[in-house]
Amino acid sequence: MLLNKLKRFIKSKTEKIIIQSTIEDIRPLYKGKEPFRALMYYIFNSMFNRTPDLNLKEVRKRQLEYVMRIGSGVASYNLVSISWITNKVVGDIKNFILKDRGHIFETVIRLYDHKWNLKEVTTYCGNILLEAEGTGKKITKAMDPTRHRAAQILTKVSDFLKQEKKRQSRQGTKVDNQNISIKTICENIKEFDKYVNKQHLSIEATKESIWAHCREMLNLNNILNGWIDYLKAFLNFNQYVMLHKGGITYLKETLKIETLQTELSNSDIWSFKSASKAPILMSKGIKSFKDKIKEYTDVIPFKLLGSTYKQPDFTKTSGDYHDRTPKHIEDKLNAIYDNKATYEDAHERLRIFELIVKQNGFWKKFYKAKEDLFEKHSKDKALKIDNLKHCTIESESFGMACARACYDLIMKTCDDRSSDMLIRNTVMKFTEKLAEVLEEVCEDKTLFVESSMEKRFDRVILPAYLSILNDKSTTLSKKELRKIHLGELDSVFFGDVKETKFEYINPLKEAYNKPEVKQMDFDKVVNSAKESNIDLGQKIQTDGYTEENTFLQIKGHNRSSNQGNHTIDNVEYWIWFAKENQKLVNHHKDYLVENDMLEVIVDAKKLTKIFK
Image (cartoon, helix red, strand yellow):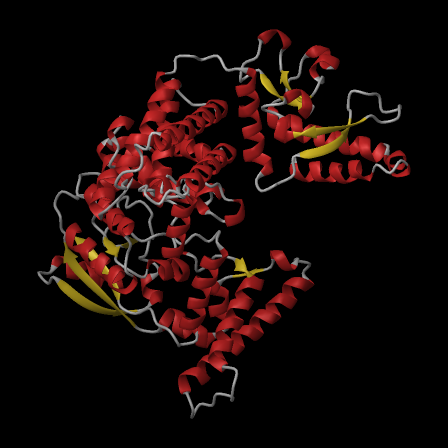
């Protein structure tokens, strides 16, 4: 029995042992990343090994295709390395820690009974069957016994999956709801079961310190995959925490690091799932990590989070954004533990950073201003233009510094939980001031010196930050209010929508009369409000023009309905308006067609699509 062998090893003086075992024997002992509780001599996945994110199709494909290769005998589990941690300070670890193979163990052990989508499993089985069969001459046993055997096993699996599809269809289960487990396949295809569950594998158990465990994990991964600096720093951060008493409990239960990672993976902002619709701030930085590593979503957020703990005073962070070594990143991550950050606090800080990034309209305006300045000054070949060139909000370093500036301004303004409105207002003011400062340092040529992120911070970002911080005025002008609310619509709805002008039917006129067609222009909302036909509405007429009490509306709407009041916010209003306008257009469709006013019909559909 495997458990007894592991117990005997720990009680012996032997430092390392090789044990022959099978997945079938390991399954009862493997507990993944569960809390240790009172268990002893069991096998747990290392904190450093990421749990596969099954929400991602490419992850499911990678895992299930690997299972098909193992089950058909063309791949193996390889050596399974586990550590018994010997550090006395880490007193709560009385179990073995898996160094590698975490993803496949999660799949064939923890998810052995998991119900996978039958259609996907069939597809992935077909992919590996095609690999085994090839596209040329039929593979015989004499030509290649391994491929021949694999093709036979996978053909049986494929046939079984087809039968299972028919069976579930007869029971009335829709194709998208049909599922199958690895366990079910193993129970029905004995050859597949042999290689998944009963084939011998070697377990290498070693008594070693946290330090040695981490070095070995780095070697296992870095030599083969060439780990980037962040992954090395993250490994060292985990080691740093685990060397403190209660460190694992802190990571699992206080910080809930895996929960934070899952939340970031599910975020449309940090996951960069749709590059064409992704916000511009730090976009090149996020994409760079996406191209290098599989689990990339927490890299920039955790760097930002760590920076807020490492140095709370933004004015002293000039050198914190260009990470030149893993140690530079590690110091920021370690600060999360040193300040005993809780999940609740970390989650809230990351929420604010995400909302800062989401204010895409304001960041794009700065991007355009910077591009105009670069085009103007790059014509002078005598100037050292690199600092201006690299004032790019899309980059990791400059973008992170801008995000951190906004974060600190927000935290100095609010007492507790920051509102979405406050965040929009802060980003709007900061990006405007950033563009002003950039223009000033270009005109006086103080930016055109030797290039470095520190100089860009000191001469562009910091002056903009200090200007906003020292601005004592709290009353927003109507123009600023229009700009804030338009920025919200831009970040929520417009994205890559280029059109700004739309014809609509005046909702203030009774539907039984012939329609009054008007045109709105979102491009004129800020600087030419009257011409835009979009005005500042007040939720409560007597509460004045404040950010919380105003929203953008069709001109005149407040004064003509609801006793002058609207209990609705900016986003909800435009969703409502698009639906109401579509109803009016449908009601007057014959009139519009007869009078050659087809543009109103077309624009109604566009508005409904935009404001959905």
